[in-house]
Length: 328
Image 1 (cartoon, rainbow, N blue to C red):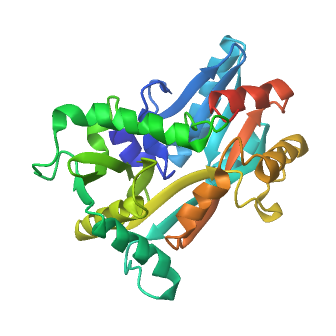
Image 2 (image 1 turned 90 degrees about the vertical axis):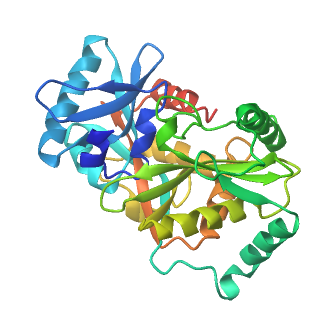
């Protein structure tokens, strides 16, 4: 945790603390690499190298040697534009994978014609009697803590069923409610008559754009429109009062793709696969729906994020990545 606070610039870096993610480090280097094995041939690395710029190359080379010992190649996901040069220098192919969205909280408001629908949704949620609480912080009689986890588990299942049988929940690149780092996240829940109808989990963000990451969000199929929006506005008011500078909405794959963002070290095969899913993969991964939700908040920071393949690209490598992240 302290290491991320010192070195992490990636707004999603906190996800490196997810339960099933492994951490690689070497003696004498103040840094770490987060990863997961994928099958017998690959290591999927997350979020770049969390170390001082002068030590990132040292740590990444050590990690690649670690992979070679088990005859595994590395695939890196959610790299920032600043990460791409190092990976290209080490003979990775580097392609844009999607985009990251954020909004500055200084002067944040939802006034004006642009946000009429957003305000109407929030008003409706309030008229429906929804009450937003921060779990573990607000002392509210309506929250039955002993039942809440079970209720939220049931909400998760109903949320995924409502998305359709072909839609999968993104894995590895999204947060979780449980695990060792759960106490460092902030969970806001919309309640009606004591029952949770929606929630949003926020994770800390470090670096130059420190603040909070709108990470895991769920809404019951029978929740009134505006439940999530009411949660976010409630959380933003609290974050601003605490002095937070940014609200990050996180990474969405297959959106914001542009030739202007592509690297010289890109793979044409990977570009075609990503573009194919972006254009025709709505039933597999709802990227358009996700980005529409993020854009309604008027993000003023939108940046590309990348993935990189060590030693070139193969169909097996692409397939392993899509399987681990649960995209297919």
